[in-house]
Every structure is written in C-alpha cells, then in structure tokens.
Image (cartoon, rainbow, N blue to C red):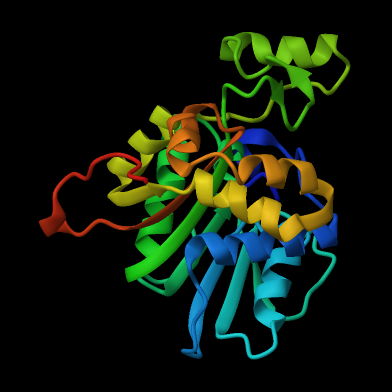
Length: 264
C-alpha cells in the first residue's frame, strides 16, 4: 500500500506519494470502515481524513447512500480527482485547523511516515488525539520498517539501512534525489501512541482478512489458504506484517498507561 500524501511540506519539500487510482481508494475506504467498526445508523457523525490525496476515500465515505458521515479532509497539496461528499482544507503542517474534540472518527492512512522525524510524527499523533472526541475511533496505517521491499521507492531493504544512507541508495538506484519517508517498527509506533495519550489496538489480522474479502477475485488463492490459518497464528506474526494497521481512541486520564497493541 502507498501513502495518500506527504503531510509536511516544510520537512520534505513537495515530494508526492499520492495514490491517484480511484478504484483502489474506494476499496481502501471499505476496508477502513470494516476495521474501524464504523457502520452506524446515527446521522451526522463527523469524520476527518488527514492526507486525502486523490480524495477517493473521503468521496466514498461522504457519498455512500444514506451515509452517516459529515466528512472533512486535509492535505498539504491539492491533488484531488474527486471533490464531492466532503469539505477540503489545505494545511501547511501537521497542525490541524479544527477545535478540540471535533470529530467522531479520524483517519491517518499512510501519512505518519511522511510528516517528518520522530518528534514531528509525535506531534501528528497528538493532533489526532486533540481533535478526536472522547469515545471516538481512529484508524492509522503505516508501512513496516522491516518490509523486504520499501513500498514507495520499490527498493529492497531501503528502510532497513541507517537513515543517513537511505538517500544515497535512492540516488544510486536512480529512483529520486532523496528518501523522504520514515516507516516505523511496531514498537516505535506503539510508543508513539502511548506518548500521545492514545490507547491502540493492533488490527493487522482483521485488516488482512478484510482486504482479501473485499478485493475478491485477485486474491482467491490467498483467501482460501489463509482461511485455514487461525487468527492466533497470524497474530503471532504481526511484527512482520508489511503494513501496521491500528485502531485507536483517546486514553482518558483515569485509565493510566495501557498494554500495547492488544489483540486476539
């Protein structure tokens, strides 16, 4: 999976990793709904997508027949291909132009790896917490640093090597002038959640099964094979998943520190 946008123009110039394939964005929106458990009969649920890229996800969520969502979307550049069903706001950093506790749901789909260094990533998660209402639900996906092939530049072991060498590798491979992504390990991401005051739940198994079910025919063999694999076995391999997928919510002061990444 690819990012929908680089969210911090100040850190990474205007390097674009937007996914502009609308059919894939609509499939992704369906998976996000499934993972977030957002099916609802209550109208007027406010939803925010951070880093909307083509606008495909926000458009899908805002134009579903009988959609319960009032959708806002933000990005640092306007690469939208569809404009209906949501309100768009251009931003210049990870700071979100909304009041505290404005949204029932927030989505950060392959964005955090683009916003900057670890401290800027932390601020991104703090902003997600700030605008999320108590009792609301968040979705965050980010590439696993230990993927064998880095998904943005399609280079093997790119995100494994020390940060200072990654841009050199990209230039030598003639894939660009610099490496402008910061994928995370599972431990790094869960530490981000905890530090930002968010309780997180690793949803990689559900996301995998949802992807195979929703995308149908092209994954027929994989779906049949994985149907025989118990969730607990897949859960034990979660650190090796190509993409970290999490649900999250605000951690209230009375809760104390949670256990990390609870699952099956």
